Amino acid sequence: MTIKDAPAKKSESLLVPRQPIADGPSVRQPAEVADPGAGVVSRETPPPAFDAVEAPAAKKTGKGRSVIDTMDDSSPLGRELAREAKRREKLSGKELPKPTHTRIMTISNQKGGVGKTTTTVNIAAALATAGLQVLVIDIDPQGNASTALNIDHHADVDSIYDVLIDDVPLGDVVAPCPDVPNLICAPATIHLAGAEIELVSLVAREQRLRRAIDVYAKQREEKGEPRLDFVFIDCPPSLGLLTVNAFVAAKEVLIPIQCEYYALEGLSQLLKNIEMIQKHLNSDLTVSTILLTMYDGRTNLAAQVAAEVREHFPQQVLKAVVPRSVRISEAPSYQQTVMTYDPSSSGALSYQEAAAEIASRP
Ligand SMILES: Nc1ncnc2c1ncn2[C@@H]1O[C@H](COP(=O)(O)OP(=O)(O)OP(=O)(O)O)[C@@H](O)[C@H]1O
Ligand SMILES: [Mg+2]
Image 1: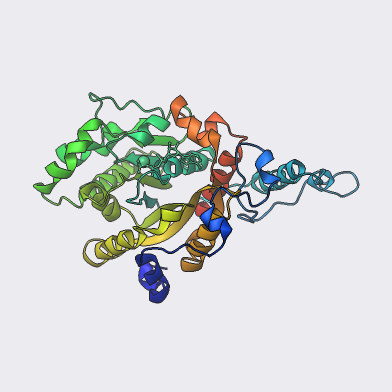
Image 2: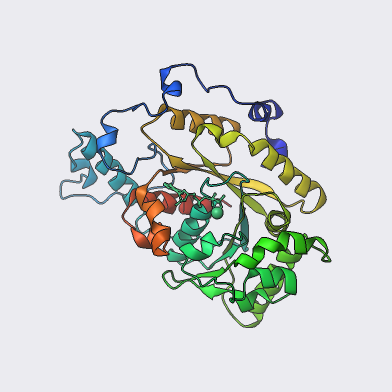
């Protein structure tokens, strides 16, 4: 479904300055604990229960009961552990299907700090760990994706800047992620900060990334290297020429939305821009995926924002929800994704679920 198909009336409500989602004390006091027991479980807040992927048959005990069925769920901690164990069981041993073509996804939201980079690197790492060939392209001058994937991106390194401005082949700048097999990354350096202005005077300024990816895909084929299954482009928090290049190169847009009060403000501007790109530069582009991030299960506000986004975009929103998680926020300071930093954390589990859902969609 393209955004053109989205019900106009519903989208309009995103345009207006938002009123509190519901009247009631919980909205005025966002920190209110919805389930007093939930807060004591761990510092990581759980996402709501969901069935992101089909479960393989549960491991049975001697009496035909699942191990999980025997877990004590009389306390909030027990219930939470049982829920997580169930989710893990659904994912374990599940093979992710390879797409029939290289899926190029742009991760974009001009709002800053909503989890674009975190989503890019963790979904990329989850898919690569599952055996798929994945390329991450960092086109944010901040270079956060390069940092999280432990890719050199100091000023002297050849980077996506050289690809966009000096026609250096993409294959010359990609580097393997040292911690995750099958994952490569084209880093961003500080030079990219000037690229928005330098691009303006260049020929085919909006198509430069797309061409570079096409050439690189052909080169890989000629060299007998495996076809890329996924390309993720991590965008800066703006709608300038770098983001336009990403929209023109991609077929799909993945929008991370933070489960906070201001999350939907600015979304209509993003959707309008995407519509412009569809009209003039890339008619294949669709908003295929929306991921709810930083979900704080202790607040009613997070649940209300999530419900509202699902109501507006029922097809696009993934069932998987990423919780606000200490482990997720710590991982980049160790130059890691949460998939390698703490694979057993609930944050890693949620990103695995999101990756499995993305892979299972056509
Ligand atoms: N689920 C989460 N739980 C806790 N912290 C998170 C979570 N997701 C992201 N963060 C933290 O929030 C901050 C912003 O995340 P991130 O850098 O991924 O956002 P962004 O949209 O890429 O930001 P920018 O717009 O600056 O590029 C980071 O410090 C990150 O570690
Ligand atoms: Mg970022």
